[in-house]
Length: 399
Image (cartoon, rainbow, N blue to C red; front, top):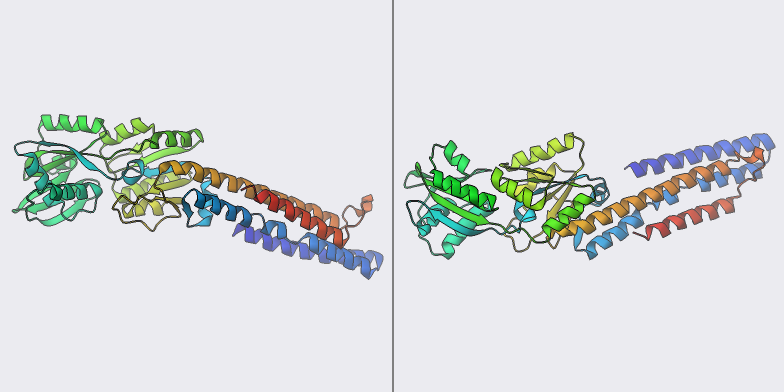
């Protein structure tokens, strides 16, 4: 939009200066031929062709480079804006981690492992969250006997609950169960803290007013994540993680990856508010998500990036500008390199176009003629315009 405005006004200014210069020379010399030559020279010099060429070639080549790196640019404007980003905000599931959680440990209290898993899976029968789905699918795979459940519901950022034999069953964070009046033994709390410190996700399961145990899930972090994020940080980017996990799990991941910041215990709407808050503090945000659960936060970001993981059964969000097809966080490195080079070349092209426009127009108007400078013939103005356009094209081919 800004480029269109500049093109429009440069063309109008050129036409005005051409009329003014032609009229001035006609009144001064009474030579219609000379006045027509000056008018035509100014008009040619003021043509915004170099400015029109400043961005399209750079963008086309940048999009091709992105496709070669298995990155799809859905919104071209987002690629240019990405060069201005100073903060990367990411969710945990499917971005920082593989997005394929699995049960690593089951610690029952007053029941058996299979009974604890069956109880949790019965309450998670209709779960949309990856953790709930893993509990349900693992119970089916292990042929656990599930119980009939009613009033199933998910509590974003907390867990899930249901009624089994008219008794409330809750599956989620320890703090939530305690808030609901479920006492948890010191032994289970200590075990849960150790799991969280190790980066596992402790899921507490209660039946009525009794906590029946913990099911710990693991979600592996790709080996490329830490070095890739460190390289991005060395380029001046701040990495912030937003997650619904507990403070201990979040702190363990933050320490492991050396993140600049991490916010725990967040629901999808709270993640969106965190992104809004960062923007109000003057940050330009690139948000990375992996599924529809991240839609609210993605919509609040300046640039929205989707990591596509084909092995993760998550409904793909439509709220994105850029798709990283291989689902590798390391592909952010070539993405930012492409964006920054495209922005640099476009700025250089626009500087060349505007500088040459001003110089050629001033010479063509005869402003320096009283100082002994010759008038610029229309053919020379056309040649100069061609050479400037060629220079911009050659510079654009570096993208």
